[in-house]
Length: 395
Image (cartoon, rainbow, N blue to C red; front, side, top):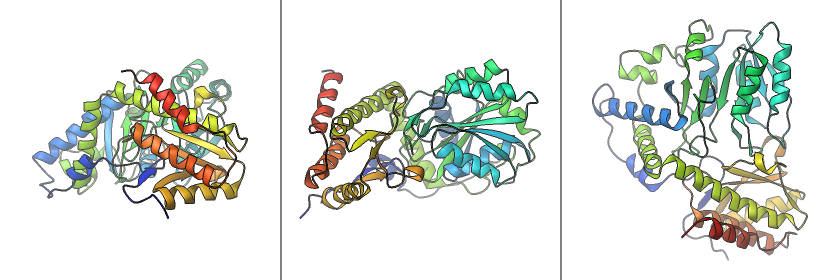
């Protein structure tokens, strides 16, 4: 017996649910890749990416997931044996650094916590020690989906400036762009990395780098540049050069539609929607935590991301029961803990194409699983989420 028949809820932190309108936009024939409509589509996508990142930088589109954009960003501004400083706050900044190590970059990790954001004071102290300027770039994620932390990018920029350091600030916004405020130029970010499958509501397979003036200047002397990732080659006069070959025509159809939906809703409204749904989730988790089994991974409420919530659980067997029940009985796929939190956490995604009924359905399925398996928890999590939204979504 189950109640799962119907549309599945995908409540994992990427890929996220793709809107029907985006799926429909991809369902059309291919067109000329060298001139006409597709050239205009590329220009429209680039314009909208710059608007989302709030920058006048130079955008590049890759037929790759976020890991590809990581390598693109590094190889275009660095040379062999250059040192980068990775700001640890979970899994993904370290992963970015590891990808650089494979292409000849010297990687140093600034140790951090899996339960808190990067400490700007610790960054400033390390940069002041680097009197010879060996560190050429600083790598950080705005949101880490393993830990569900959000890092304060403006504060990190201030720390770099206070130290008087000239390293590039490179920010991964894969889990944050289109879900929260991001101001590349105002915050002094030199390179932005993004991808399409989270807040941008598109099927995986496209990723992006946006380069500021300082990054473009470093690009001129970088010797890790390769034919596929190279920014210079991708600025050639022919349209196909923007993709280093044949463009991903149907994915561009879909991405253009997704960005149109974002534009129509409005970035301020999107950021507010994500904040409200995230806080509703946190209200539910706070109630469940009263039973002693659950806790927030990020201890400081101000450092909890508005795109995903990582919830620690003391009993690994109970974790497996929750995931199985939600999927097989309710048709809801909940995110699992990854890396250091594998087997220790569940992750509730609330990003991209999501509304109150979808979130409440996800929270309801989780609470059903807790009751069905008699897993200790505080009652009334879903009710707490409803009350929060009722109080904060005006008539």
